[in-house]
Length: 246
Ligand code: FPP
Image (cartoon, rainbow, N blue to C red):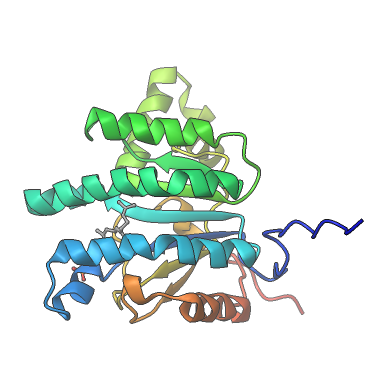
């Protein structure tokens, strides 16, 4: 009897030097589109089409957590048509991708607020999170209606409301009140499209993250680009404020 082919494992080519958590600021969709004479939403669509490719590559490289900055609290200030287009895109990404991600044992998480987005999208997000909650593969954290400062304000409010005394307030307590307290800090933050700023992304968690930027626009951020970023990470010597070992 023929032996069953070994199940393809996400960690088949896992690299022990890979970052545990990669967070990505997916920038440049608009520029990608305007350089092609297309409307900005076409750029966002191309950006959405790039998600699965990047996730697969990161997963097979041994990365355990990926956080994507999909919609910031500041993105509400964009023209209404673009905001609606991004909300619609999020809905279709959930519709198109959750089943495949679930099959690949990806656990979907959300960070940000669900109260300001249409109820049907909020429900679809909650369902995706619940459906995949017991998956043991890659943790995919989607920052949607997310802002780092709001996250810290929310944490402080929760702490104050809990009635703890002043000397009980610690870094750990603040961390415990972030959106996803069990998710480790990002080791590597990638920003596409050449800008060199954090734009209110994971401002608490990024204290000791390595930062990497590439001129590539997000829709063009392919496997070669992912590999470049991971290789650059491997070359970094992280000291977390201490001196290098003798
Ligand atoms: C920044 O590019 C990108 C965004 C504000 C949205 C990111 C969304 C995606 C990659 C699509 C996937 C979406 C969801 C909802 C899961 P930009 O518009 O600021 O580009 P620009 O700086 O070139 O104008």
